[in-house]
Image (tube, rainbow, N blue to C red; front, top):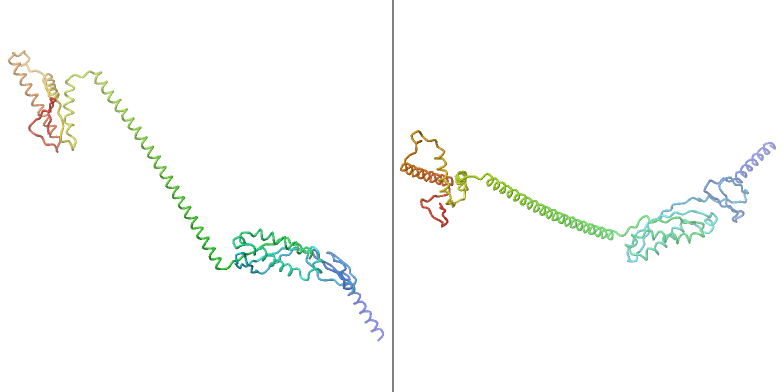
Length: 353
């Protein structure tokens, strides 16, 4: 019995020693800190690594995270300066810099930061209207960060950043804003369309103007070149005619060739036969009669009476040939009616209708 009791006591002492050693050794992870109270009073803060404390005398509190924390708060209703209620959702980035102050200066630093953020946000947004609130997020963030950093410094907390995640106005305000934006976009689209149409019309008008100017310049140049060409052609013909010195026979033949062309127009109802045509026809007739070969019977010089009768016959043949040429020219114009009479226009010319 004594041996059993001694063995049991030894076992109890061994367990107590192991438990005491276990309570005396504390291992703190990296970026963590643990506060130690000795007999109910703050003693020290355990740093990351292996630490030793006095068992049953020192009390070690749970670890405090020293890393930067992201705290997202629930959307809070905020009244703007123009009496509109908006829901604002915020995100806070903070970090514990003093574990002792975070544990002993404030009961719950996260709850304190949340309430301080809400009250500061209402103060800042309450001095702005809805439009300014929606467009001044950077201003709100900087003001919130300044107020929170100043207030949480004594709590051992540093506020690194404050972000407004969402600002939700009432549904009626959203509908009105959408209508306003749609109207603004429609107005801009109409203005851009009108500007484009005006620019298109201006460019089209300028193109038409330039085309008309170029067309007019082209027509003017073409007319000038055509006139110069005709002048040169006329001058060349005139010089050639005078240089070759044509005789009356050639001119009479040209008269006969030109006469049918005077009546070729479909609308010609009146044309003038020059008085020189009779003389031209006489020249032609004489040219043809002079060019004909003489028979052996007529090779001898006829008597004067015979020469007179022959000249009369030649004149009659020339007159008959001229009448036939005039009749041919009149027949070439179908809409022209030829009268049997002749009128003298006072210049020696005969007009035939």
